[in-house]
Amino acid sequence: QSALTQPASVSGSPGQSITISCTGTSSDVGAFNYVSWYQQHPGKAPKFIIFDVTNRPSGVSSRFSGSKSGNTAFLTISGLQAEDEADYYCSSYTRRDTEVFGGGTRVNVL
Amino acid sequence: VQLVESGGGLVKPGGSLRLSCATSGLRFDIQWMTWVRQAPGKGLEWLAFISGAGDHTMYADSVTGRFIISRDSAHQSVSLQLNSLRVEDTATYYCTTLHYHAFNFWGQGTLVTVSS
Image 1: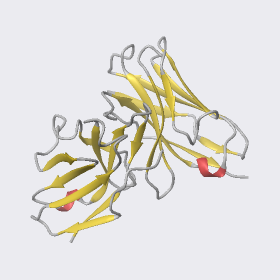
Image 2: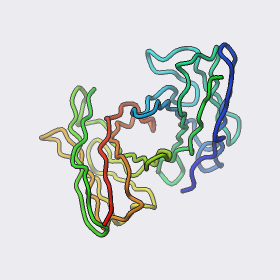
Image 3: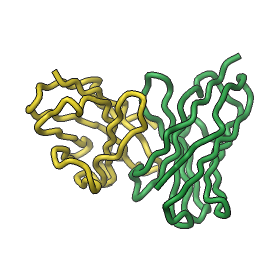
């Protein structure tokens, strides 16, 4: 069960848009539309921000959006704000009937 | 929805520990539950899930044969029995709900430290 591959860090200035990739295989990300994204601030529990590739839970800002192409999923944060500085993780269901997370991406707001 | 983990602490390598997660505000009898951990300074690692009825469980390769997930409907709680603990099992352990393969609600976590 290898972790999904995410860039270690992504940076952007306030107001810009950034995109985080999450690369898996045809056995996980590419096989199902069960990709989710989580935001984690230091010392806090993760918060669920995207499910089923593109859907936002109630209360999550519309600045967060998700997409997928083949074996890679993407999280885009538009209108970057200081409060968006955090770690972001993707997850996917797999053909083995297990779940797997990405390694995480630190978003820096310059 | 509230999830409150307990049972963490310091344990020697080879030892055992039982983590519990008290739940409220959800339909416990149909809610799938999971455990996820995070080693200090590291990323999230899914460990196990259990179906609402308790009749289907799955584990990550890293803990298969050592950890056991279970649920108690009477107390609306879920547990994780940790056996044959290793130094590399040191982490914060989170209880979460699982809704169509999304980890939608999280507890605050309980810290397990494995050290001699």
